[in-house]
Image (cartoon, rainbow, N blue to C red; front, side):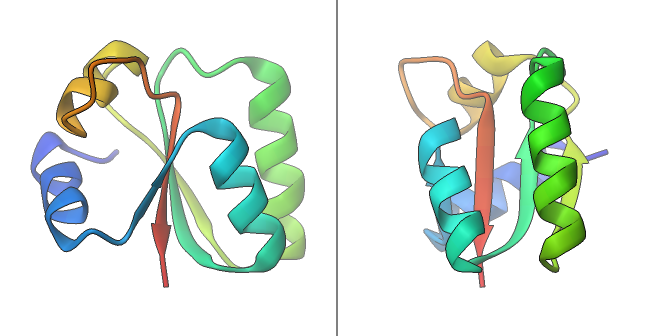
Length: 87
């Protein structure tokens, strides 16, 4: 499970992609090494991510909070469901 400290490090490195659409787009291009999902990520999205993970080489980790908390950790004034970490 990813901690708040881990998220802060990723945000500070500026090697992140925020949002479901952007994360999926970068997954298809093979640009990500890790995806961090909020605990309230919909089941359909989880299934899609697992399918992409089988085709690509990235890991999926769950954040210890919901999308509101993940958005706060990223310094955004909105909910963040998925966060991608670039290669």
